[in-house]
Structures are given as C-alpha cells and as structure tokens.
Image (cartoon, rainbow, N blue to C red; front, top):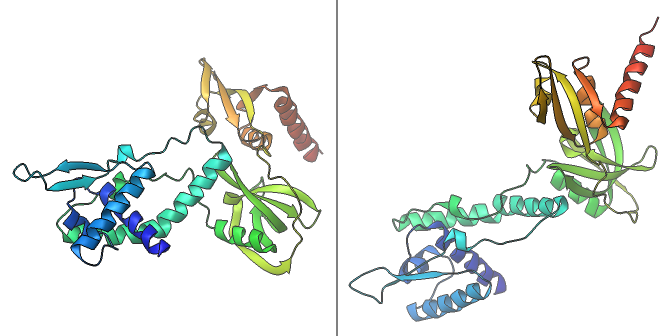
Length: 308
C-alpha cells in the first residue's frame, strides 16, 4: 500500500509540474495513475495527497479556471516553487546527489515521465518535462561505476586496465574500498594487490571494462580521502601563440608581445607536471617553487637518459 501511495504522489507531482496549464480534478484523475474507484473516493484520495504534499513543503497552486463557474478549480505546481535550498555542498555531497539524480533519471523518472506524458497528451494537454527542477548531474556518471559499487559492496577483487601518465594501459589488480569525487572527476580508492598500498584511480582513465574476480578480500578500516590529490596553484609564462590548450585553462595576469603570464589551478602536481612538459620549451614555471623543482628535475632526467 505504501509503495502504491508513493508512486501516486510522484505521478501527481510530475503531472502538476510538467503542465503549463491548470489541471482540473477530472483531468488529474485521468492523467495520474492511482485514482481509481468512484469519483468521491478519488476526490478524498486527492485531498489527502494534496495535504501530504503541502506538509512536505510542495506548494500546489489553485485557481478558478472558468469565469462563469467559480467552483471549477484548477491545480498546478510552479517549478520555481518546488526547489530546495541545500546550501553549500562539498564535492562528495555533490557526487552523491549526481549519482542519485542519474539513477532517478535513468530508471524511475524515465518510466513515470513517459507514462504521465502519454496520459496528458491523450487529454490534449501539452507537457514540458524540461521544466521539472530535478538536479542536473554534476558530472557524467562513468560506465564502470555500477560494477565498481557492486564489487565494493561484495568485497570482490577486480582487475582493470588503467592509463598511466603516459597514456599507456597498465593492468591493475585491486581491492576496491570506495568511490569519491573531486573537481568534477570520479575516483576509485583501492588497495593495490601488488604492493599493498592504497591509491586513487580516476574512473575516466579506466581502459575497457573492469573485470570482477570471484576472489574476496577483507575490507580494511580506512577513510576515503577528500583531498587525496591536492590542487596546485601555478603561475606560468607561455610563449604567445603556443600551448593554446594551457592558455584556455587559466586567467591572464600579464600580456606582452612575446609571452603571456597566466595563472592556472591544476588538480594535482602530477597533472601540472605532465601538462607543462608536453609544451616545453614554450612554457616556463614561475610559481610555486616545488613545481619549478619538479620540472627541472624531470628535464635533467630526460637529458641524462639521452646523453651519450
């Protein structure tokens, strides 16, 4: 009974949000699944649903829709009245909401919206589901996410091909412990079964599908990192008309005929290092000192590697 009632309430909210015109009770009863039985029973059910939605903070607008018959009342929900102020959210909370919204949009909402849309259209009522204020995904949900969550829940070891910093695929055997998000990216936090260390892996760098093993692992008490890859604030000097990819990522601080001084915030020092090395000698690092040293060390190693 509870699930039937919840389904009816969801259908009712979607119908009243999607329509641009006020719906009468007879139209609602035809468009929304769940209002079966006599007219009196449907009317009582609707009044209870209306009060319950109002108690949840969902404002249902009422208006007389016939100037000759003031008792002909229409109902709708304005999208701007049905929004939640969640306050400031961190990356992990946004990731959870994004995942929930994606699951909602791909399963329940898709089926309910299609059913409700057909019923409204059969009554000659246009429906615009773009008006429904569902949260937009903060980032695209990776294809491997569901498989990884299942592996984590069931404590299954996994094997995957992972692109390293040189974009070369390496096979990883892991004990997955958690998923988190940071800077619009999804990360897997897992124990490397080769060296028994915990590391983070970007889901968008997983090459091909993951392979779930039947072998089980013993989950360990760990804390999923919130800043496992701390951002790095850099100031670079880029030769004009070169390294355009980098120039579009930052804020120009100073512009001259030959060089552009630019500020870029990278997701990690490793990402900054690889990005800069791809564009040498057209990019010079001014700050911070740790990145200056890392670039110099990488270039020295490159020289030594190719020395006679």
